[in-house]
Image (cartoon, rainbow, N blue to C red; front, side, top):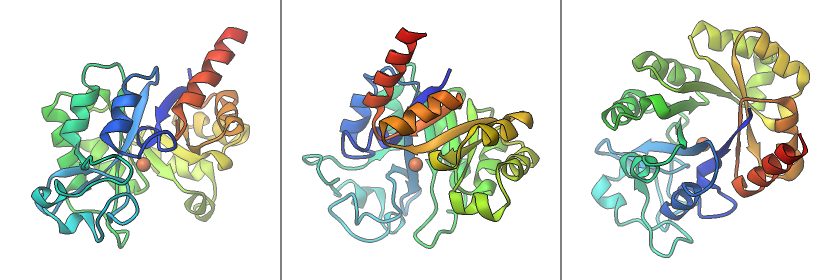
Length: 249
Ligand code: FE
């Protein structure tokens, strides 16, 4: 079955990575919720996509330059006064659901990994007894490899951008690199997926997912390809398509 992951809590339906987005996603029949983590200056795990506040919050500058006490004063745009959530608060929203956590470990504004962030994320998931319900993802191969080695997870996924996919010479090579790091799956942008690519990855025994899906045809393509999971900003539309296809099968 192709699973649906509500991307940033459904970024085209609600303000991304907000309490509203996650509380609404928690009521949907989706299998996963995707979100992003950056550290505060005092090492708390903040759920926000960009390394800076500028685009999604009423503040500017890097997330990592502010303490959690300071970030608690920052409001997310379009939320009517909500602040960013901590990972532990997000866990609280999903604990009593069947929805798996798809946690993306981000890099700083220079594109450098935050030292120790994979360990902090895994420790936080472990202390909430959530590692078995969590999939860790990152565009950094070393970050996913580190997280994979720290605890048995539900899954771990190396996200491969179209540019990186081209530079390393295609999906078979991406799968081989992931395999060498004991990473069980890769995630590709929907536009770079096709039956041949899916077969190349599956032939190596790896899982394959799609990301970046926003429209009806993009999501139908994911179901047709039979990928393991795809992330979408429109989980409502994905559910509609999945329901329709179930009725027809
Ligand atoms: Fe993400």
